[in-house]
Every structure is written in C-alpha cells, then in structure tokens.
Amino acid sequence: MAIDLVLRSEWGARAPRGSYTQLESTRGVKVHYTGGRVDPATVSDHAKCVALVRSIQKHHMDANGWIDIGYCVDEETEILTQQGWKSYRDLRVGDLALTLNHELGVSQWQPVLEVCVFPRQQRELVLMEGTSHSSLTTPDHRWPVERLYRRMGGDGRRSLASYERLWVTTQTIGYWDRIPIAAPCADLPSEPKWSDAFVELVAWFWTEGHVMTLRGGRRSTSVALYQSVKNSTYVARIRAALREVFGPPAESFPRRGRQTDGVPRWRESVNRHLVEFHLSADAGRRLLEAAPGRVPTHSFLLSLTKAQLSLFIETSLAADNAGDGILAQKNRAAAEAFMFAVLVSGRAASLRPRPPTNSCKSTMWQVTIRKNSYFSPRSAAQRQANFVIKPLRYDGEIWCPRTENQSWLARRRGTVYFTGNTYIACPHRMVFEGRGPLHLPAANGAGLNAGHYAVLGLVGNSGLVQPPDGLLHGVRDAIEHLRQHGNAGSEIKGHRDGYPTDCPGEPLYAWVRRGAPRPGGGTGGAPPFPGRLLKYPPVMRGQDVRTWQAQMSRRGWNIAVDGAYGPDSRDVCRRFQRNQGIAVDGVVGPVTWRLAWEAPLP
Image (tube, rainbow, N blue to C red; front, side, top):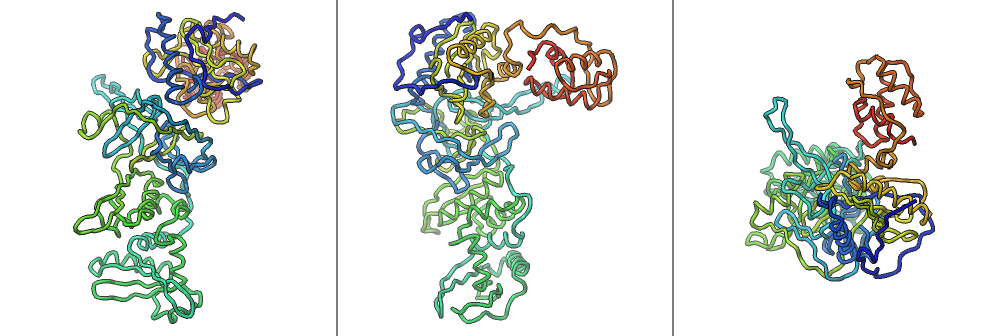
C-alpha cells in the first residue's frame, strides 16, 4: 500500500520532551478533526497545511504541556461534585460530577474518569471576566454553546431565529453563542423520600431556626423555629407543617435534660414580637439529621424531587428575606448548600462575599439566582464596560477533568458555567507523521488512548468543513499504514464514538459511519431516485418501495419485500440511517436511497 508520508523531519516537528508510551497493538483507529476554523486555501496551498500542523504541535506542547503533538482551566477553577465544589487537588477519579448532556440539554451526574494536570510553565491563556462570568482557559478549550441561526419563514420573508447546539473553542466562540450556565437535571428522584411538609420545615429551620445545647440529667439539644408575629402567613405555614409532620401541639415537654418517651412533639408560644415553635429532642433530632449545624446536607438535597427542590428554595428565600432571588448568610457552608440546591434544581446561581455595612457588621455570603440559563461572553464584551476578553500570561498549573459527556459544571470567582493526534491527513492526500506507530496517542480520551490510534483530518467546524477526496484518501492511507506497521485492528470510529464531543465534525463523521470508503468506491451504483419520498404513515405502495426493500434485504436487513412501506419498513429505515450517521427520520429520501446501494456493507 502506497502512502505519501511527510516525516516529522520534513514538516519541521520539534523533538518530544520525553519518551512515548509504547503500544504493541490497538483495536483500530479513531478519526479526529482540528476543530475551529481551517482556512479553505489549504486545499490549493500545501504550505498552509504544514504551517497548521506546526501550530497544532506548538499548542499541544507549549499550552497543554504534553510531551508532543496531541489534543484546560487554571488553578482557581472548581468542579461541582455530589460532595460539593472541589479543586483539582481534591478531585478524585470516581467522584460524581455534574456534567452536561449537550445533545439533550440536560445535566447528569457522571463519574470523573481522569484528572489531567499539566505542570507549571509560562502559557498564554484567555481570560473572560466580568461581574457575571469568570474563566481562564487555554485557547483551544472546548465549550458547549447554543448558536443563533436564522431561517426564512413560510412566507419567504419572515426571519425565524433558532438555536443549535454545538461545540466550539475559546477562540472560536461567536458573538451570539450562548454558554449554558444551568440545565435541568435528568437524575433527580421521581418518587419523594420525604413529605413536602418536612422539606418545608428543614428550609425554615436552616434559615430561621435556633439550636441550643442543654445540660441536665444528661446532655440534650433543643431546636426552635422563630417567626415575627407580623408575618402571619409564614407563621401559619410553619404551624401547618409541624402539625403534618409531628401531629398536634403538646401542652408541655418533659423536664429539660431527661430523655423523652420517643414521641416527637412541639409547642407554640408568643414572646413579645416573636412566635416561637419549640421542638422536643426527638423532633429536633429529625431536623438536625437533615441539616446538622443548620447546614443542609448534600445527601438530603440530592434526595429531593424537582418539585421539592423548588419548595425548599422558595421557602428558604422567603425566610431569609434578603431580596428577590437573593439569599445572604453569615455561614458560608450554609450558603454553599443553598447554592448546591439551586444548581441541582436546574437553575443558575453565583456566590460572592458581601462586605460589612453599617446595618450588618459581618461579612455575608450572598447567593444570587440568575434569571437566565445561559451567558454570551462575546456579546457581553461588546455591551458591558466591565467585561473583558483578553490574552493573559499565566505560569501556574492547568488541569482538566474527563467525564463521559466531556463536560462539567465549573465555578470560578463565584460564577458557574458548563464548559466542556497521531496521523494528520491534509487535502493533498499527504499524511503527516505525528507520534507514529506503536506510540500512545494523546487525544482519544480517558481509557481509550491505548485502544485506538488517532488520525486527524485537517478540516474544522468552519472554513474548510467538507473533507476533500484527497483528505479522505489520506485518512484511509494512514489507516492502512497503521494496520501494516502498527498492528492496528479493524475498527474505524470517530472520536465521538468513545468520548462525547463534536469531533470529527458532522461531514467527516458521516463518512466514518459509512465505513470510511475510498472516494468513488461503494457496493455499486444506485438506480435513479424514484422522485417521491417513501414514508409512513400512511402506508405507501409501489414498485419503488419494492425495489428499496429488495436492496435492503440483500444487505442483510430483515424486511418483507411486499411493496408496502409501513411501520416495519420505517423502522428498518431508521436503523439504517442511524448506522450511516445521517438524519434519522424514517423517510427514504435521495440520500437514504443512494446509500442503500453505495454504502459499504458491514
């Protein structure tokens, strides 16, 4: 097999900083792309391909801190786990972190697969910072965004605005791109563990409650809830919740310091301008288990349904009474717990210290619930005087966690947001040598590097997007070379097959899903498209249906060749479309028709 291989010495590669991890074989190859914008002029100017490959190696070695070419955030950036916010020093493999399923637009708890930390050295990062956002990342750091695009309305004149979800880098975030800062959590319990009344009591307790240790015959704890007599509505809510959870009020409790009979009780009294609700030791113990030291536990908050989280948040805000969507507490741990509840509920929030004032001599920790679930940094840089996007020299460590969704909820300076190669083929059917055969690649993802070599095509998500025939031939040449000289197995997959990402881009990935055929190859030419879309419902009948069914049967699909396009034919069509990496709609259109004949057989 002939390959036009551009050796490292020929494209001016820098020497690696260390030794490669050796491989004896792999299951196959994963196809990647560069991401970002690739100049379309590379198709006619090979020198631009050489310059692009050099720039990729420079970034991977100088910015990422890798020993060589391959495919982060600063030390201040934290990640949200089920134990709360953690720095990269405290994060461990296996910790459950809140991630974003960008395709579905929901958040999910997923284990951290790897914590990658790169050593201290001088780097140029990108700072995006203002009152509503703060991030410091490498220029190629990936972000999930919602991108605005416009299409014409049905009347041909109206412009309809829609958003599409895609992945970009820090450098390629567009003016209208929106970074998600919150998403509905798909992992909330569907069945309640607690009654709504108990959830409400915990909210009143941690914000307005009081805990006092009593001494008598033996040590005991007294719990009380207070409310102003003027707030009759809140008084009634607390009273009703206590009745539902603990029954009617008691006349009195056993003498202080003595063990009760195990029956939770409560009593109500008025002390000047306050209504006081005192709980027996057993009743108070139940609230303290959910919020020891008046700090709600993460396990309690994670056990709440979506409706109960909303009830907890609404009650806490009402009791705290710091302002619309604002909660302020002296105890930072308590404020952090409330912020945790807000984020898990699918809303965004920020946390900042509020300096002492004449009316409040203590520093308060203020949680602000954001009204939007997204943030547009480029737009903010144009519209807000205090928001900047600029390069910044940085000499600390950089790091990045890896999760199945390739995303995670980050926090920096109080603001939160979701943030998310071996051979390189160019459009001239030339293949650049990267790390070479039998060497561990860098960019396949956690647990996958030893399983597949990486082949990168010089196309991006803008500019040069459609892979030219020469590039596809080059990728195939690289794959065959790795099979012959690197013991690569038969698998040909896209980067996204093992690691959720947009890589290698839709056009190149569709080609991979079709079996990565040589341009002009296939299993034979397709007959002319019949001119009508085959779809169900209703059942469509005709010779064109029978022709398509017969071809699908020859391909090995279990389908009746009866000339009737019904639910079974539609289901086969959908599965075939999914296998080919094209739109799954169950309709046999021109593309699906052609692939039935031209796509390589599995």
